Image (cartoon, rainbow, N blue to C red):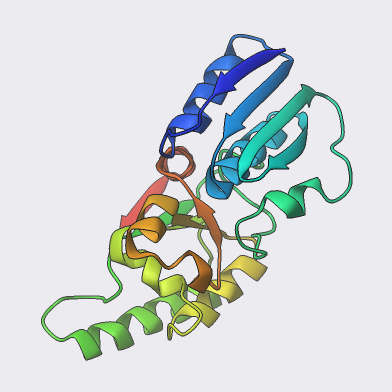
Length: 210
């Protein structure tokens, strides 16, 4: 079994190290981690590559054990998620490939436009609401202040939930969530990492950036 010591490493490095082992043909992998966001990201990546995964938690020291083609015991995935909200029908690198002629949306701000914050919030809510009612994107990725759109009390949170229910992969930058110290306030999407965000966005034919 190949062991990867990713403790103390910020996202997306744990996933990148794990991917390197998978690319080398390793069939049994053990990843040592020290935060639940990284553990969740690593587990989703390995599951997307056909591995069965198990999570062990020894007083905050996390170990993800994976074996190719082996089904994970019931309950392991739930234990690893930093939030209970999970997007069904993920179209990014950790799930099924995005279909042809798709588009994705990359949002790095909580308002649409900067001159008037109140107007910008209304416009962003309207944009996401309209997006949820039309041809939905494969991915909506949130970074920088854009992660605040996924807060429970955000006026846009319900629209992100609607997009999730329609199969859109809503990815929330974990580094940004940690920076703003809002991990316990995320109400929509999956807390992700820049590796998954970049890989997911580049699978779409077009990317809209706000």
